Image 1: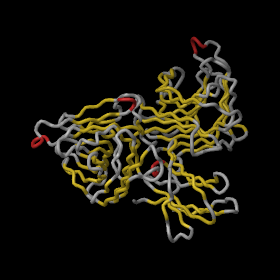
Image 2 (image 1 turned 45 degrees about the horizontal axis):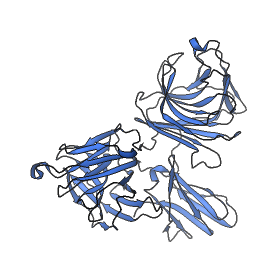
Image 3 (image 1 turned 90 degrees about the vertical axis):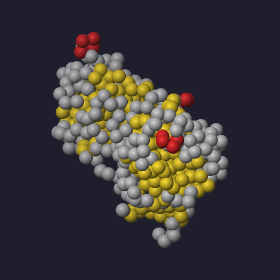
Image 4 (image 1 turned 60 degrees about the horizontal axis):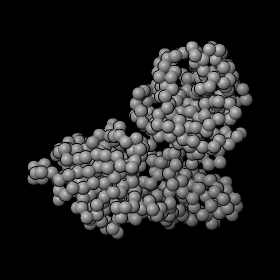
Length: 494
């Protein structure tokens, strides 16, 4: 843990306590005047590469025969390291919006990349159209995945592009210098054509214009993006159904995932109504899981919520923890699940009746034996409407996901949306001025809603700082008025 004092206007002094984010495994600021450590990708043979003025500049004239050779394009691959999980970032310091130019990051590039053979993924920013997209590249042929994020680029601006992937999740974010916590454009997609490969840089023109790509401050490392699913694609890619006795049903109304469970015909043998889903292949110990929940029936005797540290999936065998809201009684509970049998760990917190026509965000977090649950009303952002905590050490790690069930074997259903789950990691708390008498606190999403911001004037008494906390592109942001000397830290607990 580091204690850091940041220079701010004299009207107040803010001291920051936080955890530093992990460093990058590969870096190049190009100040050495060469591209040692890079393998140039020059499929047309007419590309030019130069490291001048502390930036990596690569250019290519129009292709003499685009029908046969393809359009103008050029790139460079970082040598020596391949990633499956990756997080790559680079500055885009110079670009001309009058030119049909796309610049970006390559990832999971397959071995033997050459003219007509390069395959992998690319996150690209088209400077003329203001498009941010993620492409699957097969034999040098790009195919966009899921559309583009559009915005209006500001001429002369140095943008920073971040591209990350873990398993089938791929995310790209473009940040401007005036707001490094909130991206100006973001894309999150799912694809698992390529699981592992090298990283690099690319510049190209679909219309075969002469191009120049300029790059600076390249960083790459193994690392997880936040596994996200907004369910707008209308499928369950990345999920394993929890449907142990076959009474579950799954659909995608209005961009959400509706999970329903019918009553079982013989609850004495089969157990009660239950169904859900877990994220495929993601095993977490300390965890932070969040999801929007709505569309439940308050008259039904059902429970809806989140799962964590799940293992041994199957009828009568599933273990783990569940944070659930009882739709009829209004109780929020944390349960230990052993062989599919839930046992409440705590006394529960009674909520005001939740409106099934509104959306709520449930957050479930665990650090060692301490388990924490929160519920937020998305229509009135700010402090949670309910908080619950429990301690239990029965289960150490496992998968995370979603659940609906009824202990009385009543039919139960809910609609889930905007799922996000990942490890509870170092928060990387950072601070900057956000106007007179106001600061902006930012930290990694892994702590987005699972930690709380605390403030003190003397490092003795700490108080929770009220929200709302906003989450943008892997960063949580909270704006806070400050007067006099203040200290801030991230705390974990109810």
